[in-house]
Amino acid sequence: MRRDNKLNQSKKEPLILTLSQILQLVKRLDPIQSIEDGFVAYSQGKTVVPPVGELIFNQPPGDMHIKYGYIKGNDYYVVKIASGFYENYRLGLPNYDGLMLLFSQQTGRLLGILLDEGHLTNIRTGAAGAVVAKYLAPSPVKAIGLLGAGTQGRLQLTMLKNIIACSRVYVWDISPEARAGFKEEMENQGYEVSVAESASEVAATCNLIITATPSKKPLLYLSDIQPGTHITAVGADTPEKQELDPQILARADVVVVDSRSQAQSRGEVFQALRQGTLSLGKIVELGEIIQQPQLRRQTNNQLTIADLTGVAVQDIQIAKAVYEKYWEEMS
Image (cartoon, rainbow, N blue to C red):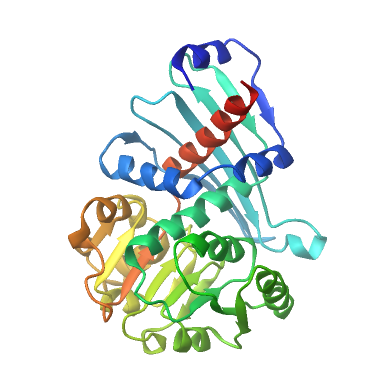
């Protein structure tokens, strides 16, 4: 979008996009490349991303995050609010909600209100998983394993479609209904899905594993993992959550995070640092491995881990892409 057009937009009332509009616009975007570019900018020091704001709830269990920031020299800054309340399914409600606010970096004017109900957070997290697989997945991938059969697990698998040539999938979830629903939906998309009875069964069969649960205790242990496996862990986005035993990270040949600073306060790396099984010097950022091939997996016998806690630059990139796509199609 031309800069003069952007300044004209800042003089108008904020654009309000509903979830249905956003979902249609996303179908015509390439979120994977946009998110990849954002990680590179982040690791190059071209972003301003303050610490995450959050609220943690116990009864019922839930959490709310505020992530915000900007890319230097860009046209926008973004504030994202997203919540996860994990027993909403009992009420017939989605587990996730939220919105994104997009402002002009030149004027401070509110340009867009994206009522995405948490969906853009899910999309940008799914896209991040695809970026990780692009640079760290073993070759060939024998089978893809999913721990977590909810929205994020489904999006992670869908985003891999153009990155990993593998249709064999194993899924585990604490809910038998979720496992059955995942199997039906993903088989309709052409995958061959097997339902596992345990997380360890997934690990015994798959050399690319994605964990996408709100677990507060390890689901996978070092003894479960095959040599040459890659694991992308996306569920642990608060200090309380954990999906991997820290010994897995201690043994890993490559440990990647989306944000080195953020990983010191949440996620799998945080748990391993706290237990003394991992040193901060061992971890690298996703934006760094994109730019530096020598930091990636070097052999198919290596164990690689990516711990994604979600960084505001992803929200900036996805909100910007949706907003600009709307005006591109309106012009």
